[in-house]
Length: 201
Image 1 (tube, rainbow, N blue to C red):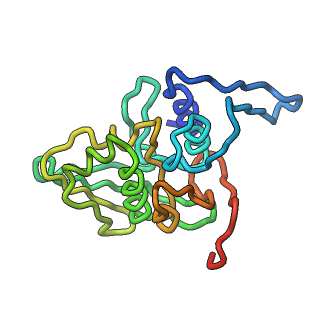
Image 2 (cartoon, rainbow, N blue to C red):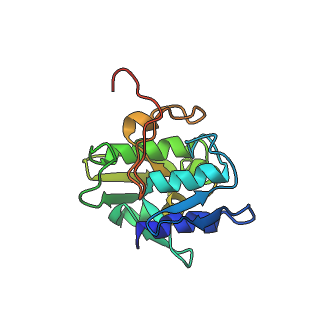
Image 3 (cartoon, rainbow, N blue to C red):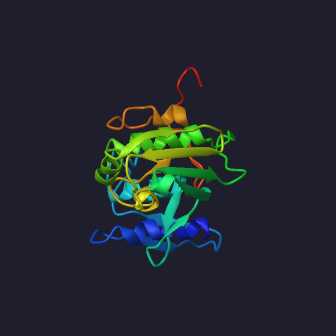
């Protein structure tokens, strides 16, 4: 699956909402993208607006994504192993994943991002009613320990809409989910930019 398909899928999945207008510029190398509204929020966890979701899917990346047939596929994930009759999920990241600032994507970034998303999303909060523990025992692998089997785990992590489980650096994902992040540092198909830089970074 190509990353450009993820961005296209995000727009298609926002059913019933106004579609953006895409027009070709004079240069064959430039595409003008005009969303249906101004980008008032850059945080797809803090805001469920369509334009924020589309921006989030462009600059951030996701662990799993829906394909053209809405079937969940691995994106940042190399694979997962289910043990203990569905009570342990070991999820391994692909090699070479990096954020746009050059830092590697680590399992603890995923854990923090999932926890932030689950505090805002209905399916995410449902997931955590059955999860005993979510941890990152290594830099490349994180694991869920549900109280009972939860076969929809990849589907929950691939849901696009209000709200989408995008992956952020741990320090960014530690911002409360009702507070907009102050910087955009992702690993998605479109390089992000920083809207502000905190003194210690």
